[in-house]
Length: 331
Ligand code: TYM
Image (spheres, rainbow, N blue to C red):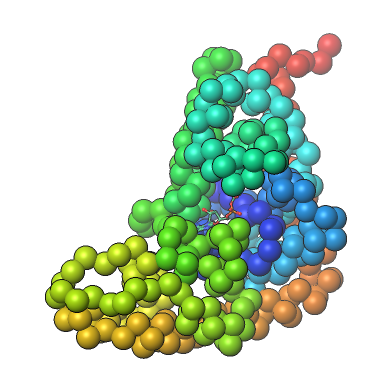
């Protein structure tokens, strides 16, 4: 049986990128594997959230996990901050993580470019904490979106290095995983790059957005003045809309708009309207459930308690062995 670990930072509501990059895979994996799905609340501290926001966002993501269909009896659902064993492993792994490799990490370089006033050590060692999250359960599969590929490569490096230094085979090599195919990148609505919470207002469609909000966001999505030559290549902003259409809409719908693009008769307004309705239909049942779960404090408490207990068992057993391997032994 595979051991599966993944997490999401609680920095707001989940968007379609989180859903199709991560959560949808969690759902497909939870029946047949030993799954640990957590909320990466330690990781979210790099941006210094205030305590009330942090707590509310953790609850929101928990509610969204459940509303999407995660089953707390099949999977272990917990908060990263309830598993202090992860911190100890993070410390051990930090001893074998080199400054040069951390400096070369793309997400770190991007963060320091965007936030030069907050280049903290937590940000610098972010991939080490992530490796600790994964290795604390000795996971071999990690369902994530394309943007996390490099972090997973680093987790493999840290796992292999630990094994080499201590002449052990304790840690498996964790693989970035997408059920059945390649890792996905869901584009945003602003014409460039990926869908993300910090990419500016209107770039992301959230699972909890109302139908009106979704329609409004889609209508504002960046496009161009339209194709003028039959079968011409699509610029990035248009390709992004087609990528979303491929994920959200039926094959017939995709073909209809592809044909219209290729013979230069496409009206982007029609495409956006169709895409908005398909997103609304897809997210309707999830949106309704999020509110119910969010308001059910008893259920949330039960999920966290059950998950923490199960996660603790695995983490305590593994950290005990790691301590032994390193040479922290009882007299
Ligand atoms: P985070 O919170 O940025 O994103 C959570 C998950 O959503 C995926 N994702 C996307 N996938 C496709 N297209 C997009 N536009 C898109 N945006 C986000 C991410 O790939 C991710 O799978 N470092 C992680 C959290 C983490 C973690 C871990 C994950 C901490 N420890 C251990 C796996 C294992 C992060 O910041 O994800």
